Image (tube, rainbow, N blue to C red):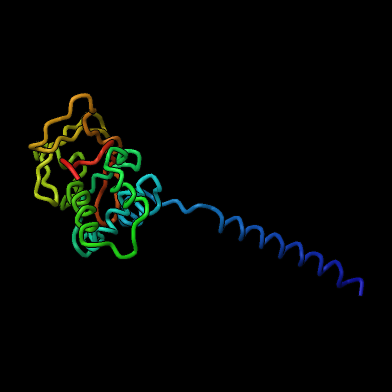
Length: 193
């Protein structure tokens, strides 16, 4: 009878250690690599600072255009804070997306997504030989001027810069996904919403 106590104590300690290890692993956040391992939508879901833009993709119905089956895409993704200058009702839509958006809500979200997306995988190094020109999904042209290894400025053709408002900047370029690339921007590329 005394032999069972030490064994059961050892087993209990071992089981407790395994349980603790499993709990620690479950609570650890998953790190989504930016090296082409994960698709763009998975990467955006993992980055809470881009929640509003991801919600715009979902509301607009444009998520189906993003994925390896459709070919590579390039997204110019503003941070949540970068979208603060948008109208309050539109921000409310992006912050609390409805489960069944109306056609008007879809259209407004699509305008944001389409102005900030382009076909093909366009890293900064790929854009420069094109004289910095990129055509967006809404058929507008933007000009990307590299300012550093992973930074650039962006100007939408036909849209005059607003006095006192800083230029749109790519603050972190070339975030690589398995189905494209995204560039983090300081504000949305859009004439008006």
